[in-house]
Image (cartoon, rainbow, N blue to C red):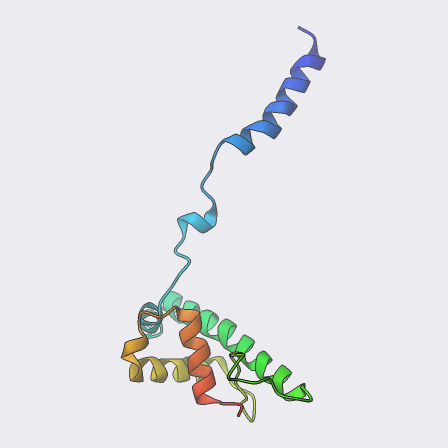
Length: 134
């Protein structure tokens, strides 16, 4: 058998097989949606992995809300908040990751009715309620 047709068949298989075979992705094997209650439990620091996860999750969502707050301050005309809801927070000084976790934990503890809400939304609301812009 000639090496050229074998090479062509192998190349075709390499292109076609991934398209027809469904392989699980990393995202499908990991839990991707957390709710407020699950994140609150992680933030109770039973171990170092929980602490790291909590700090990273809360600070990632929190920093985006602070960035939105800075962008809103730079606008010449603030948006109509009745029409647009932009999750934003406007602290007067630097906010540490620990302070964000503390604010989230206090907010979650006070808003048990929000425990089934997505964790991202809960963190954003906690930052907004703790450091409001308007």
